[in-house]
Length: 192
Ligand SMILES: Nc1ncnc2c1ncn2[C@@H]1O[C@H](COP(=O)(O)OP(=O)(O)OP(=O)(O)O)[C@@H](O)[C@H]1O
Ligand SMILES: Nc1ccn([C@@H]2O[C@H](COP(=O)(O)O)[C@@H](O)[C@H]2O)c(=O)n1
Image (cartoon, rainbow, N blue to C red; front, side, top):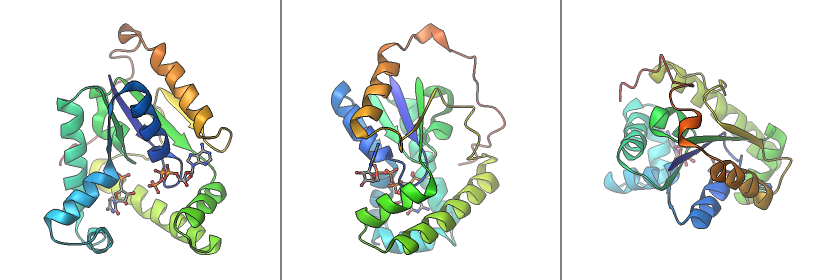
């Protein structure tokens, strides 16, 4: 199976993708890892590349093209990134969306990155708005449209183990014939 995990910053994507891949003995591929590869190929730090990405849309496109290629060619992978579900599209067998209120995500990010909560809240909000705008402009994707997902979990309600159990239940009860072709992704411009 190809499983995607998507959601906004601090929603718990990496946490779930890592434990899910472990439980299924799948590979975990993260947008963050690809982004770090992109930075290394250009002789830059991820932070430097992140700044450049605000001016240069090729960087987002390069990352998203690699996500889509992985989804097209590989199996037994948990593919995790903001746009993993959209980029994998019909190549994905199960698309998971994670969310949590901004306040909770900001608190997690503030702890993870050791920065004041106000700063984490403002940066997370601003970055989320900027990303949503870019995805719409580049690919005609509405990041807030959850209709493409098979399973959506509010990670403010369950801890990492609970989120993993819910997802594993969905994986174990997955039937190939259950959804094929019933929720196609249309109108996205995969002009990568
Ligand atoms: N279900 C959960 N309940 C409580 N805390 C969680 C949960 N899932 C993850 N966390 C914690 O929240 C923080 C953010 O999680 P994680 O890094 O997995 O999010 P992410 O969506 O991958 O973030 P980003 O997109 O910013 O990389 C981590 O410190 C993690 O331990
Ligand atoms: N323009 C960008 C794109 C990505 N990043 C970093 O990659 C990580 C994964 O991004 P996804 O969109 O695939 O979830 C993300 O957490 C960033 O660290 C970036 O910095 N700038």
